Length: 180
Image (cartoon, rainbow, N blue to C red; front, side):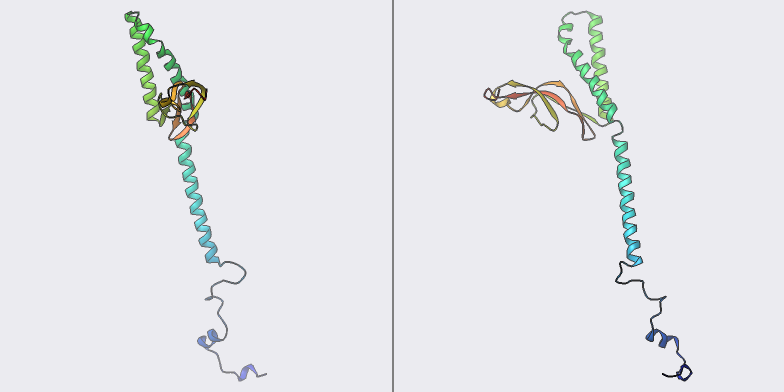
Protein backbone atom coordinates (compact mmCIF):
# COMPACT_ATOMS: atom_id res chain seq x y z
CA UNK A 1 0.00 0.00 0.00
CA UNK A 2 1.23 3.35 -0.89
CA UNK A 3 0.74 6.40 1.11
CA UNK A 4 -1.75 8.87 -0.39
CA UNK A 5 0.77 11.62 0.16
CA UNK A 6 3.21 9.83 -2.13
CA UNK A 7 0.82 9.97 -5.13
CA UNK A 8 0.88 12.87 -7.54
CA UNK A 9 -2.07 15.28 -7.32
CA UNK A 10 -4.88 14.38 -9.74
CA UNK A 11 -6.20 16.79 -12.33
CA UNK A 12 -9.79 16.84 -13.56
CA UNK A 13 -8.77 14.89 -16.66
CA UNK A 14 -7.08 12.15 -14.69
CA UNK A 15 -10.10 11.93 -12.35
CA UNK A 16 -12.51 11.33 -15.22
CA UNK A 17 -10.26 8.64 -16.66
CA UNK A 18 -9.96 6.79 -13.41
CA UNK A 19 -13.46 7.06 -11.96
CA UNK A 20 -16.62 8.10 -13.78
CA UNK A 21 -18.20 11.39 -12.79
CA UNK A 22 -21.76 10.66 -11.65
CA UNK A 23 -23.01 14.05 -12.86
CA UNK A 24 -22.12 13.52 -16.54
CA UNK A 25 -23.03 9.83 -16.84
CA UNK A 26 -26.63 9.12 -17.96
CA UNK A 27 -28.72 7.25 -15.46
CA UNK A 28 -29.25 3.93 -17.15
CA UNK A 29 -28.82 0.52 -15.76
CA UNK A 30 -29.91 -3.02 -16.22
CA UNK A 31 -32.73 -2.30 -13.75
CA UNK A 32 -35.04 -0.66 -16.32
CA UNK A 33 -35.50 2.20 -18.72
CA UNK A 34 -33.67 5.42 -18.16
CA UNK A 35 -35.43 8.49 -16.86
CA UNK A 36 -35.25 9.97 -20.35
CA UNK A 37 -36.97 6.90 -21.84
CA UNK A 38 -39.60 7.03 -19.11
CA UNK A 39 -40.21 10.70 -19.83
CA UNK A 40 -40.60 10.03 -23.56
CA UNK A 41 -42.99 7.18 -22.82
CA UNK A 42 -45.09 9.35 -20.48
CA UNK A 43 -45.14 12.19 -23.01
CA UNK A 44 -46.40 9.83 -25.74
CA UNK A 45 -48.96 8.34 -23.37
CA UNK A 46 -50.19 11.83 -22.44
CA UNK A 47 -50.48 12.84 -26.12
CA UNK A 48 -52.54 9.70 -26.81
CA UNK A 49 -54.73 10.52 -23.80
CA UNK A 50 -55.33 14.06 -25.09
CA UNK A 51 -56.25 12.75 -28.56
CA UNK A 52 -58.64 10.16 -27.08
CA UNK A 53 -60.36 12.77 -24.90
CA UNK A 54 -60.71 15.11 -27.90
CA UNK A 55 -62.16 12.28 -30.02
CA UNK A 56 -64.63 11.35 -27.26
CA UNK A 57 -65.66 15.00 -26.90
CA UNK A 58 -66.25 15.30 -30.64
CA UNK A 59 -68.36 12.13 -30.62
CA UNK A 60 -70.42 13.32 -27.66
CA UNK A 61 -71.19 16.58 -29.45
CA UNK A 62 -71.85 14.78 -32.72
CA UNK A 63 -74.26 12.25 -31.21
CA UNK A 64 -75.73 14.36 -28.39
CA UNK A 65 -79.10 14.57 -30.15
CA UNK A 66 -79.35 10.84 -30.82
CA UNK A 67 -82.28 10.28 -28.47
CA UNK A 68 -84.16 13.35 -29.71
CA UNK A 69 -83.59 12.36 -33.35
CA UNK A 70 -84.91 8.86 -32.63
CA UNK A 71 -88.05 10.32 -31.05
CA UNK A 72 -88.57 12.67 -34.02
CA UNK A 73 -88.40 9.72 -36.41
CA UNK A 74 -91.65 8.58 -34.75
CA UNK A 75 -93.19 11.94 -35.67
CA UNK A 76 -92.05 11.46 -39.28
CA UNK A 77 -93.94 8.14 -39.25
CA UNK A 78 -97.09 9.87 -38.00
CA UNK A 79 -96.86 12.35 -40.86
CA UNK A 80 -96.39 9.49 -43.31
CA UNK A 81 -99.55 7.82 -41.98
CA UNK A 82 -101.50 11.06 -42.22
CA UNK A 83 -100.32 11.59 -45.78
CA UNK A 84 -101.48 8.08 -46.73
CA UNK A 85 -105.06 9.37 -46.50
CA UNK A 86 -104.55 12.38 -48.76
CA UNK A 87 -105.64 10.73 -52.05
CA UNK A 88 -109.08 10.00 -50.59
CA UNK A 89 -109.37 13.47 -49.03
CA UNK A 90 -108.33 15.31 -52.21
CA UNK A 91 -111.31 13.72 -54.00
CA UNK A 92 -113.61 15.69 -51.71
CA UNK A 93 -112.54 18.90 -53.51
CA UNK A 94 -113.19 21.02 -50.41
CA UNK A 95 -110.84 24.03 -50.24
CA UNK A 96 -110.33 23.92 -46.42
CA UNK A 97 -109.50 20.19 -46.62
CA UNK A 98 -107.03 20.76 -49.48
CA UNK A 99 -105.43 23.66 -47.55
CA UNK A 100 -105.15 21.44 -44.48
CA UNK A 101 -103.45 18.70 -46.54
CA UNK A 102 -101.07 21.28 -48.02
CA UNK A 103 -100.20 22.46 -44.48
CA UNK A 104 -99.48 18.89 -43.39
CA UNK A 105 -97.23 18.38 -46.45
CA UNK A 106 -95.27 21.58 -45.71
CA UNK A 107 -94.87 20.66 -42.05
CA UNK A 108 -93.66 17.17 -42.96
CA UNK A 109 -91.19 18.58 -45.49
CA UNK A 110 -89.85 21.10 -42.94
CA UNK A 111 -89.41 18.37 -40.32
CA UNK A 112 -87.45 16.14 -42.70
CA UNK A 113 -85.33 19.12 -43.88
CA UNK A 114 -84.55 20.03 -40.26
CA UNK A 115 -83.56 16.45 -39.47
CA UNK A 116 -81.30 16.40 -42.54
CA UNK A 117 -79.60 19.66 -41.47
CA UNK A 118 -78.72 18.19 -38.07
CA UNK A 119 -77.23 15.04 -39.60
CA UNK A 120 -80.17 12.62 -39.70
CA UNK A 121 -80.58 10.53 -42.84
CA UNK A 122 -83.92 8.78 -43.29
CA UNK A 123 -83.56 5.17 -44.39
CA UNK A 124 -86.02 2.73 -45.83
CA UNK A 125 -87.14 3.17 -49.41
CA UNK A 126 -89.25 0.91 -51.57
CA UNK A 127 -87.25 -1.08 -54.08
CA UNK A 128 -83.91 -0.93 -52.27
CA UNK A 129 -82.08 -4.12 -51.36
CA UNK A 130 -82.84 -5.44 -47.88
CA UNK A 131 -79.87 -4.92 -45.50
CA UNK A 132 -80.29 -6.56 -42.07
CA UNK A 133 -77.97 -4.00 -40.48
CA UNK A 134 -80.29 -1.14 -41.57
CA UNK A 135 -83.69 -2.82 -41.91
CA UNK A 136 -85.88 -4.84 -39.60
CA UNK A 137 -88.01 -7.30 -41.58
CA UNK A 138 -91.37 -7.51 -39.89
CA UNK A 139 -93.11 -9.38 -42.70
CA UNK A 140 -92.57 -11.08 -46.04
CA UNK A 141 -94.54 -10.91 -49.27
CA UNK A 142 -94.49 -13.15 -52.33
CA UNK A 143 -93.14 -11.21 -55.32
CA UNK A 144 -91.84 -11.67 -58.85
CA UNK A 145 -88.32 -13.12 -59.07
CA UNK A 146 -86.70 -9.73 -59.86
CA UNK A 147 -88.04 -8.22 -56.60
CA UNK A 148 -86.86 -11.01 -54.28
CA UNK A 149 -84.72 -9.56 -51.48
CA UNK A 150 -86.01 -6.02 -52.01
CA UNK A 151 -87.96 -3.77 -49.67
CA UNK A 152 -91.60 -3.95 -50.82
CA UNK A 153 -93.24 -1.72 -48.19
CA UNK A 154 -92.04 0.64 -45.48
CA UNK A 155 -93.93 0.21 -42.21
CA UNK A 156 -91.78 2.72 -40.31
CA UNK A 157 -88.82 4.71 -41.57
CA UNK A 158 -85.52 4.35 -39.84
CA UNK A 159 -82.67 6.77 -39.48
CA UNK A 160 -78.95 7.30 -39.26
CA UNK A 161 -77.39 10.11 -37.25
CA UNK A 162 -74.07 11.11 -38.79
CA UNK A 163 -73.77 7.61 -40.21
CA UNK A 164 -74.68 5.79 -36.98
CA UNK A 165 -77.89 3.74 -36.94
CA UNK A 166 -80.36 5.18 -34.44
CA UNK A 167 -83.44 3.30 -35.59
CA UNK A 168 -83.76 0.51 -38.19
CA UNK A 169 -86.46 0.85 -40.83
CA UNK A 170 -89.29 -1.63 -40.34
CA UNK A 171 -90.01 -3.16 -43.72
CA UNK A 172 -91.81 -5.87 -45.67
CA UNK A 173 -89.35 -7.92 -47.73
CA UNK A 174 -90.04 -9.65 -51.02
CA UNK A 175 -89.59 -13.43 -51.13
CA UNK A 176 -90.08 -16.05 -53.84
CA UNK A 177 -93.07 -18.37 -53.78
CA UNK A 178 -90.84 -21.24 -52.64
CA UNK A 179 -89.57 -19.25 -49.61
CA UNK A 180 -93.04 -18.14 -48.51
